Image 1: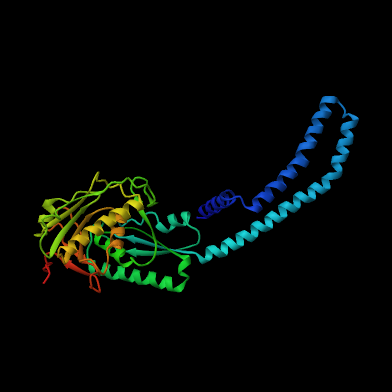
Image 2: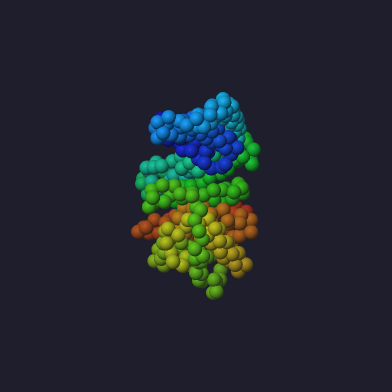
Length: 370
C-alpha cells in the first residue's frame, strides 16, 4: 500500500514538473545552472590548465581573481532564483491542492456479471483525473456467476444509485463535479442506468478491456462503420422487435422462442466485440438507433421490444440517447443462452409516460399491449 502511494506521488511530481513550462521551473533551473557553472565550470577548467602548464600563467591568475570577486554575487543571485522558484512552486502546489479538493469525480461502477471484484474503476479514474474521486458502487450480483436472478431488487438498487448521484450534485458546485461510468452488468440494467442518467450532464465512459484486463476510457477513433437495417419497409402493427447486433449476432431461432412479432434488424457491418472504443462512433450509431425509433413511432409503433447484443458502454450510451418523451415504450430484454424462452424477462423503461421501470416476464405475463 505504502509503495503504491509513493509511486503515485512520484509519478504525479514528475508529471507536474514536465507538463508545462512554469515560471518556477524556469527559475529553479536557471539558479541551479548558475551554481553548476560557478562551482563546476571554472574550477575544473583552471585545474586542467594547471595540470597542463604546471602553473597558471599570470594572465589567467588575474582572470581567476576577477572571477572570484563575482562568485558571491552570482551565488546570491542563484540562491535567490532557486528560493523564489521554490516559493512559487509551493504556492502553486497549495492552490492546485485547493482546486483539486473542490473538483470531484463521481465514479459509478456497476458490477453484475462476475463475482470477482477485480480492478476498481475508481483507481483507474484517479490516474487520469485530478480531484477527489468518490466511488459509487452499483453491486447487482447474486453470487451466481454469470446469471441474473431477482431482477426486481436490481431495479430498486439502480434507482437508488440515481438518487445518490442527484444528491451528490446538490451537495456541490455542478461545475466542479464530473460523472464517470463503467460497468459489467446485464443489458437491461445497463440500458436502464443510461436512461436514468440521461440528463446528468456530460458523462465520461469507461469499459472493461478483456485483452488488457484493465479499465479503458472510450476515446478511440471512429472507423466509420454503420448499421445495416432491414425490416422497416413492410412494418405493420403497434409492437415490434428491434434486434440490434453490435458485437454478436441475434439469431432467428432465439427470437422465435420468445416473440411472435415483426422484427426490425440493425446489424453492425464488420460486427465485432472490440469495435466500441470510439465515443464519437457510439454517439453516431446511437443517433442511427434514435432515428430508427423515430421512424417506428411515425409508423404507429407504440412499444419496442429491444434485444441488444453489444458491449456495456454501447448499451449505456444507447440508453442515454433514448428520448424519454417522444419515442415509443421500450422493453429491453435479458438473454439466456440455451434456454427457452431465450429472452425470459425484460425491463419496461421509464419512458413515454411510464413513471417507474418494472420487470416483464415472458412466461408469467402477457407482454402485448392491452
